[in-house]
Image 1 (cartoon, rainbow, N blue to C red):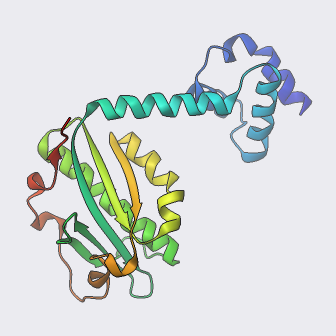
Image 2 (cartoon, rainbow, N blue to C red):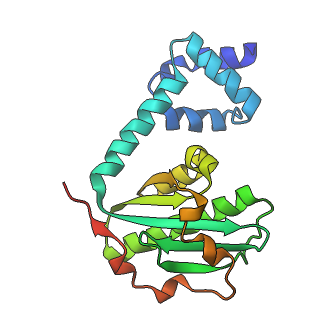
Length: 205
């Protein structure tokens, strides 16, 4: 603790001028990007009046506002996965199947991982829609029946922000998920078989 504290103290003038990503980069250069060291780094910052968590929240809020400002279109996708069958499905907001088949590149080890991978496919597809319509940013709502994922999808939200996708996740009951039946169907449908230009709608108001 003392060595990290001393390091922070020696760089205090620089650290006070950094935002959260800047602090992350500085910590990485100093070899403090492992869990134990980073916790001590945040404690040392706080002792010198730098609240890392507050800076992180402020940065994410600012980024969210910037992203919302450039989103001109929105779309809804519905996902599901079945680990036991090694299958996924992505439907449009009305329940029409857009993309389904087997996980070939990476076979999920758990149902949790399967649901994550299916949601990642929806996120990737939204990026393709964004490119197709020429939008700078797009708002995506993913509906899924994995309640824990709608609250714990930080990895998805981070990936979405990097690609100018404003991500919202909504949990729906499994019996109301139209993607569910496509995770048990044989065969497949490629995402390229769809007209991506009609999947997104202009944001009104």
